[in-house]
Image 1 (cartoon, rainbow, N blue to C red):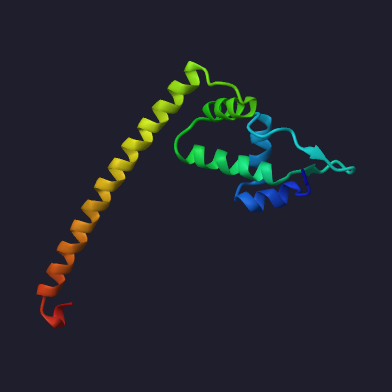
Image 2 (tube, rainbow, N blue to C red):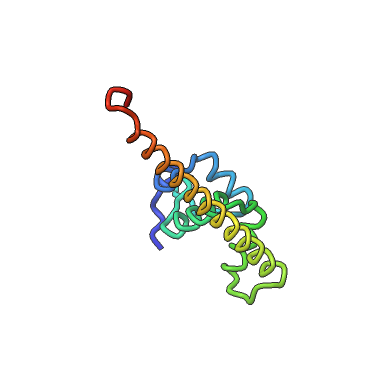
Length: 128
């Protein structure tokens, strides 16, 4: 695999800071990178994809420990343990709840928008 990106480049590619990337390495969310002859960390596309996954999982409310468990399971290509399956089920249920709440809120905003438009149209031209 071609690992030619330095930490600043992968930070730019993922929208993360170099400090965050180092923190993720420290917490084993990202494998320790290869090093150049001069000691620079070198990353590849697989690292970008992994960091994107971590970002999405964090945004959806997963803890770093939960993310690490999922990544470890994926890397091992093993059948998931009951704990990980339960975690995934809980997170899926949480996402379903969030999506339902967001849909309800979107409908409420649309209703308010339509009501506001009707009120605006009822005003005299010089009061708009």
